[in-house]
Image 1 (cartoon, one colour):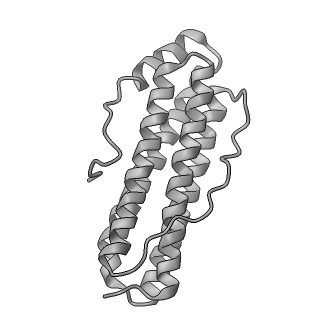
Image 2 (cartoon, helix red, strand yellow):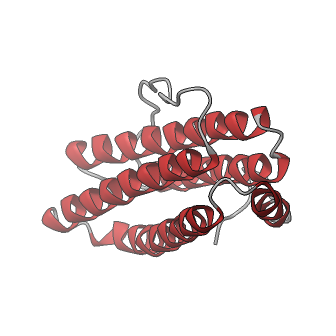
Length: 173
């Protein structure tokens, strides 16, 4: 079943937001790299790659439904230079919360139109966003406990740097 024009537009907006999230994570990674926190930077780059995987899932869904996937205008991420580690992860959490709300809005719009074919994809994203927010929120909490303690930040940097990496073409299931 083809998406309505209004749902196609909402999915296109979500695709754009996923790419914007990727760029935001890339900029946050730059800020971590500037502080020689290579593990945190690697973790953030992995998140950026994961956002591209998410965009690809939405693109595939729109295309599979016989609609046209498109990327809209992406604004600069608005990440200021010189962020602390806490500010980096608070910015990441704020962006995840923004993406979560956009997905919930997309879910509500699909339900309003009776577009049940989008539910499996949107259910996956609802679960994914719960996980994303919980993970980043936990990191924010840990950074608050650490404060500006150098050894604590280096330990967190090392731990986050251990995250396995994958390709942006990987299936994020």
